[in-house]
Image 1 (cartoon, rainbow, N blue to C red):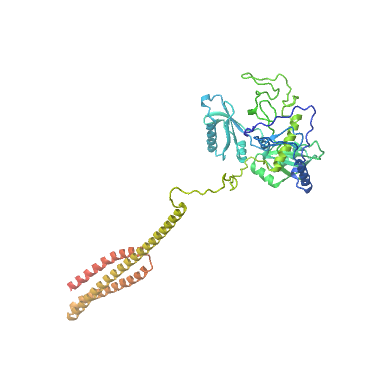
Image 2 (spheres, rainbow, N blue to C red):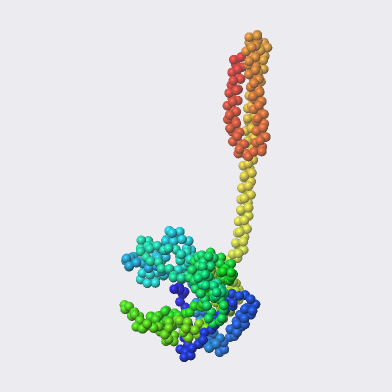
Length: 523
């Protein structure tokens, strides 16, 4: 199944031919996969022959551009047909809800897409996005992905039997598409196909769907083997290596070139248009008898009927002379379009180039400059904006400078505060020391004037006063060291430490002061 958008109608096909037309010989494999100089020269020569423009060809206006083959002029193809011929979309998956699900409970296509996304998240399946989800029947929905990795993930996954408590059947494509196919070239005829398959499976364990390719139109002592790979990593690695060993032979490994896709109708089974542009009723693909609503169709004869030439074969069979001729003309037209750059062969999952706008793509209709004067005496907006922008930048610079000045001022005040605290502390220590010296001198004078008993008591007081003086000296030395450190340290840290030291030392100094005064009174 393809999910390519519908293309416009092509021109009518040629009338039925009475004489069979021989098909064009298949292109040698060496033309596609051998890069020798002789093959390139043959290819260039063939392209030069095909590039001769057809004579007496007229292109009507208000129509899509068409490319016709350079001979016979029976077929003309518009751009939609040529683009479809080189597309290779990934196959679709189907979900069919069981008959036990009531018609009113059957979800819409958007709801099915949401259910699928939740299912992928619950089972931890890394799917980027769904490229399509549409209803293809009363209980059947068709969905697809646009990435090759996502397609393989869904193709190899074991689908559940229910989705959100609704019984459903998931149908996967029967085979992998051609974008996962590889071809082993020039396998000698003396190597059995089963042995060749075993050798391929030893090298690429994910290989499936083997088929041999024989070229009957030319004598070759070898054949090719086509297969698909279910693992994208193994597929890409095999392509990078480009060779595969079978027996004693190191054979080239290439990608499979897909044939150009035909444009055909699934109602009348004629080539050249789609079903939405066809006025004929839907017919059986085998006997071409129109279907009747509500009646199960059964072919009366067991023979095929061709919609192109009325022969006893399938309508799209390659043995049909009309189909052969159509393929020849389509191939020539597509090759010419590819060589001229009108179309490009795309691969599944290929990211399209983003749109780039250039200056000359959309020129102005009127290039002349019109000098118009404003009705109001208004100044130029650009000059006003530039002036305001300059003033704003100056204001920002002034505010920034003021902020830096305030920071420096605050730092200076903190430093000054710390120094004042240290000086206050030193002053208190000096006062306490002077008081202690005065008390000691008074005690010594009493010791000189007193008797022996009083001297022993006064001696103890003198010793205690000396110890206090030594203690004050140590505190003064420590204050000097703190003052030197404070000049280096941060202002806030100095202030905090000074407050703690002041509180502690103030209590000690006051208590010592009271003790010395009490000592003098006792003496």
